[in-house]
Image (tube, rainbow, N blue to C red; front, side, top):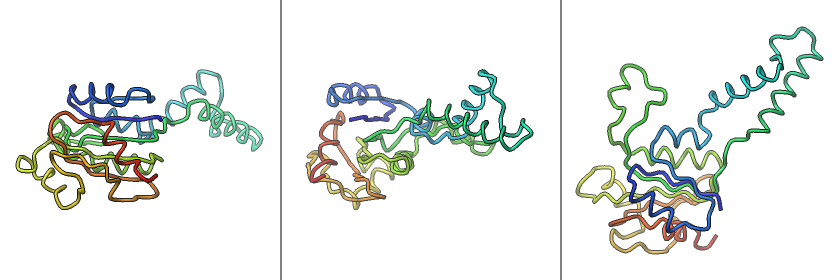
Length: 199
């Protein structure tokens, strides 16, 4: 299974490598890198295809004159895009609280970059949009220590100290989405197993 784990703490990334051994695992430690890995940066991908075509001497459809040349240019661009498909993950498991990234930030938004925010919710929904079948948002933050962790209390079916393998609580666009509060180091293998119960 192709799995993406997103967490800004090294101990949790190390745990992913241990508890998800045997899977095709990618670990990422920032929101911006996760954004790109999930295929959200379509503009950057379009730029990459465009520049690759230029390097190969292929003109864009806007640089040619005849309809036949435009069709050929579109087909050439589509062929390059197929050579470099966006990475798709079967499962995406993300931390709830991480430093905010720089993506799409202007002068006003820059003040929030690097500040801890509940970005896990957005990353989970991005994962669903881009085809992940199993998605988990996980926090090891005590609900008394952060409002976003407290928000999970009425939404989770998982205990703080006892991760129950009871399956996902939500189905979103056909994906199983679970919200987890765990104590100590995250056992990503158990989290994935609980998402997969009954699938």
